Length: 318
Image 1: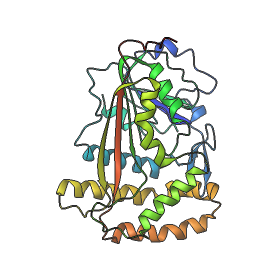
Image 2: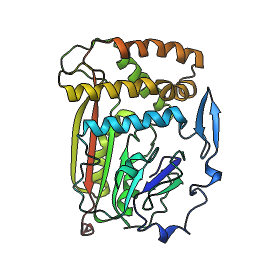
Image 3: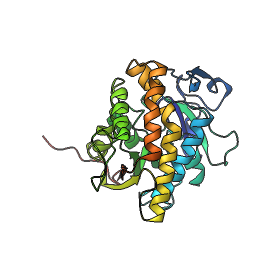
Image 4: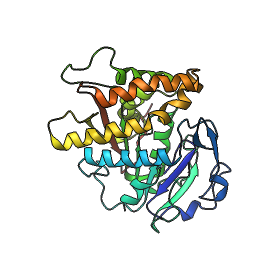
């Protein structure tokens, strides 16, 4: 439902009418004003809060996001969430992208027609939320680690927005290429690429790895209880013997292959100071490795979920 300077979707109107007149100057509904873009290195970017979001929102990126959704659904065996939800009536999807998760669950790039119980809001998730306190049953965020600078604040805002007993769930691929059987070599191109992307985004105060590792701790510090974490290996390529995992790996490889230019061009040129030509040359070997590597490589997929207590936290007596 939110991007750092993007959109949020909510598969419910409950709680939305109450703040429809409270939107800040930085909050906009799906109007022509926010369907504005800037173009750079042949890619289209969201103009709202220009410069804060380093990834494109053009047609190619939307297709990649939908493939990513299909990959995660296969990896998770059709589960849209791991949190034990019980008929939630008001749900927020942070950084909803094309809106496919929100629509299945029933940068403004969402469809102009959506189900009646889905609304999109463009706002900056890293500022104070306009969502009324205690109004949501469930908050979901997926693959937002490359975009958020201050996760503890996001998690605290989510805590305030949830009803007692509501759930927060954050799902992310950790940007670390691993191998369980030692087939990865020290200079593996895919591993080098992941480290380079981590370094580039670090120039913008975004830590792709530490944030995923710290979600459970930050949730506990915000007051959440029943913190749980599911970790799955996401194969890159068709090397798994299991047909289901091989299909997941095919989708993962294609999703990464199609997204390489979009993942890289702004972070590498703005963060590392590379020229567009240097980026293109670098990506040649990465694309080749994705298609020809014999290493059994994976990315860890983390789903961390936690519950807001039914009763308010008691302050410790001094």
